[in-house]
Amino acid sequence: MSTQNTAPATEAARETTRTQHLRRYLMCRPEHFTVSYTINPWMVPANPTDTDAALRQWQVLHDTYLALGHEVELIDPVEGLPDMVYTANGGFLIDGIAYGPKFRFQERAGEAVPFIEWFRANGFDTREPVEVNEGEGDFLLVGDVILAGTGFRSTGDSHREIGDVFGREVVSLTLTDPRFYHLDTALAVLDPVQGVSNGGPERANIAYLPSAFDPRSQAILAERFPEAIHVSDEDGSVFGLNSSSDGYNVIISPRAKGFEKQLLERGYNPVLVDLSELLLGGGGIKCCTLELRGA
Image (cartoon, rainbow, N blue to C red; front, side):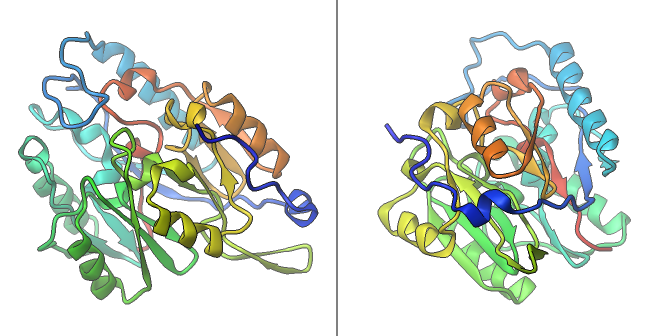
């Protein structure tokens, strides 16, 4: 079992003044949410789901973004596609370019067309993928670098493809724990853009669960992000890392108590939102949030 604080904050990290950056997000109301199939360890069709509860919890997340000053766009839910609520899997967008999804499992394949059509209708330069990828579930922008997950959903070939689409460095990371089948369940971007703090450059930073990655990936993360927060398995297993940060406010599960404390120690403002009903489908805060960059 991993433990917290394996990468303690330096005094400089503790003294850093965090800056909020306003975002534009795409969300989808879980009007058809249910668990009728199993494509990840969290999905158990025998366990009852409550669509009304999912809607109430989702609405709190939606309203929290608005209250923090962010912009939220909506894509219409499609009957028969209960996982559309997890919009992070619907694409990856930088500078007005939208790289569409190609889902691994047939149960979600029908989501690709609605997302791609939404991107086109809303002015994005939309690129249809050849390779299997599940959008921001496995691709996370940190500074100028794209961290790319593989092992369960997106394939290594999609890492090459996304690098070609955006002309950016792509760092491949291999997930090994089936509970954390997407990169955004095991790693959270806390400072997505470079800024200036205390008179000097501020490094983009992350939080992650080391045990979710293979040794090579752990070494890469340790080298690139020496100030990263190492989160415990206890907090990871309640999807504490499936969070959304604007550089200051970090929206997390209220059950991730250790992670909440770690964020406070680093100068972030944890905002607690419960999406326990949507966790029955294997998704959390970040899963329900796709960042729209540009256009």
